[in-house]
Image: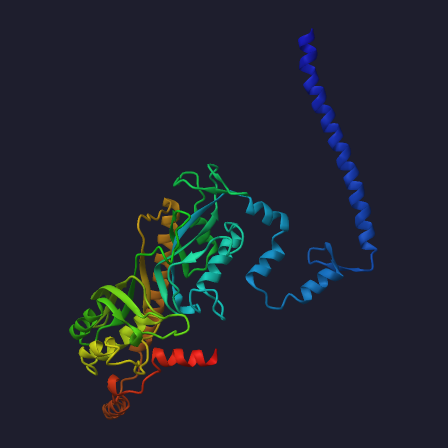
Length: 442
């Protein structure tokens, strides 16, 4: 008998709880109706009828905010407006881990990689927008201990850029971070973790993609932990002396002073010695009519501002027969050539940061994310091939050039292409002259 009473008690308690909740819901519905009536009669609000027939109310504060919405705001300001304070506090207390991300981007429409640039968009700003949108970012950029391997310029692309920062983690095996309540994942576990590649690639624009991620130690820095960087510069080989270019390029290998092969920053850079570990000129698997695409491949521990584009510009002059390979020796000898001759850098679009080398880093990507990445890149390749096909058809449709007109144009081009040897050109101020000028202003 007592057993039957014991079985009925939980049922009775549950029914009582349900009745209590129903009563509370009725009370809240009454309060809601009362407040809605007061709001409708309030003079500080205006009704706005929506297309579906419902009515919304805009307060004077809300109207003012909407009126000012056209003003320019930073990404952080926009995020602060849309993310409530308690959400931010919760995010800051979630488990996090320090990871490196391998990133590719097609740089044509960007004003460089770094978000410190005065122009938008940049690759870095787009990456942080995606990190904020996906709630992967823990704290702000400074708190995330962010670092980047290379700061590529406007128009430059990459298939092997590397960045590092703290990201939110799904893993629970953590350690306390001093007195802070943030929990940091230290192990190298992958199973059960957020699929960073898939999540980020869904939020990034079409011309930026994450290739992989890797957990890294807390003392890792994407810039200073890098052992070497490799750049490719793509070009069409027609009418160029490739053997002379390769012979000249080998002179760069070793530790050299490259002040005549860069844009000098005398305020921040005081040593212009850099080590080039390898140089090669190699054919690519792309042809246009009878013209072969080639790549200059340059690998070094670090590079100066615009160094690769300046090196390539001089190599092109050699390949065109305007300069001897010996001009590289002259420009590398800073006692003989203390000032950089004035010459135009090679264009930025064909330059690609191919890879960044680190000790022990093994980037990973889930099979689903990898498949989605391949499909996306194949689609982008097809899209660019279609555009190229349209231009090719336009080229075939051009009217033939008359013989007399062709010879006239050739004479004009030859007149414009009169070459002034590099060693005979006007020069830029030397490093010492730049420093003296800076000191005089101090």
